[in-house]
Length: 436
Ligand SMILES: Cc1ncc(COP(=O)(O)O)c(C=O)c1O
Image (cartoon, rainbow, N blue to C red):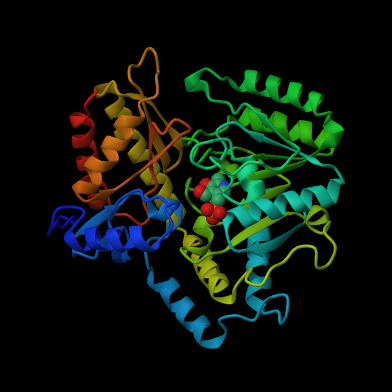
């Protein structure tokens, strides 16, 4: 049985009418990967306002890893909403906040005492991790990487590498942020070269001024590039010797996305602080900073917090996500999906020269599209064409990469084999139809 049901052209008339209202009423800034307004969604299927059913390979940017509206989450959210929607942890604390921190401390990699802090969004987790690192070290500077995306608030945006659209028109940015190359072997930046450049930069900034190094163990927006284990090991050793707080931004790669709770586990990486958001709440806005207890305790009482951080309903949803992912079948299924998708994508690479690289970790996989395999010139138009081809035929897909030339697969990890095969038929047709 097919899952995709197309009752109208995509976008359908109701989506088109809503888009006109959106243009009139909503600020220009927020972008849309697809011009399709959703009505409801379940598992890996989205039903739009025109009654079309689409297969979701984007999961709301890697958020609904446990699927859209899983019963256990809906029940947990409803039950919590009936008891307490908001208390503010800063006014009248509640058990759920503590219970979620206990769970996160247990899940995060590293055999050391840990504590956690909850906020609302990925960017807020990034902001707080830098505050915590500065409070701990008493130092000003932070090293971030090329191709990094850390969010849209001022510090997170400053740490983000890509200028357009994330930084256009928003200068001046925060000071004391240095940028090092991220290992990108396909485009000629080896782990050795990246680490040599990192140490040069650290020496220039004088390592004793550096409070933190922040890295995505698998680049998200930057194009799904996993950092090599040896690079992360050298970075860890450097940070330990120099008293620098090493922060892993696992906002996109965490919570099952790579087949383990955190990608760091597969990369033998135990950062001082690890950041979660997206998949953690299963769709409810919640984020966390988890890490070494003595670093987490650096800010004075009242130094970090917020009205909504660790909202009880979002916490209940996150606890339900953790429960779902602790099912012994969940993560192995995600890893199996990763292996099978990697096989498909690698076979495509042999057939379609537009695919320069296939990469990622577990089921967090992407294609890098190039104008020709020898020059490796980024081919952003083809990524855009492919996304359009797919949504017009009932598959939701997203681009990525500093040059916009990657196509990333972020399907809900509960997608069935049949749904995946059906969606990939559409994607492959799209690859065949790409025009130079
Ligand atoms: C790695 C990474 N860090 C931070 C963020 C920012 O998260 P949010 O959009 O929740 O602020 C994102 C969002 O895409 C991300 O992928």
